[in-house]
Image (cartoon, rainbow, N blue to C red; front, top):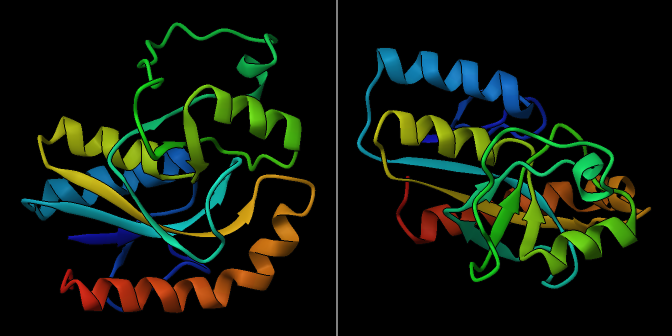
Length: 172
């Protein structure tokens, strides 16, 4: 099953699940309860923390939920966070988009590569249902003060790149 956030990130061949951590988790759980599947693929866009190429496709099977408030020692969480220091292409998910280059570099130093608002909840729901899952994400921007402008500028091409990638690999 292929899923996407929906709204501006909709695809004819993907089921929309909602934007952000909460909506995507609730809607995906509801979908999987009614329509079980043996594999889950989330498609969407991402912002890069430090390295990588804009409009390139990245696949990720690992996501965490680190908020900037925790990064800046302004908060703590009782949730157990996995050690990501040796992982590659780890996605960070939050209900916020990082627009501070210093924070983005700190996330990068923690071993995080990119951010996408939904992937963490998608992978957690998949884990609950014991379904293999991954995210296929196209980078639209770096996480800096120009994140939103570059997202808007690159979003249309990112969707084209995702569709081409999915079709070439016969994931549809």
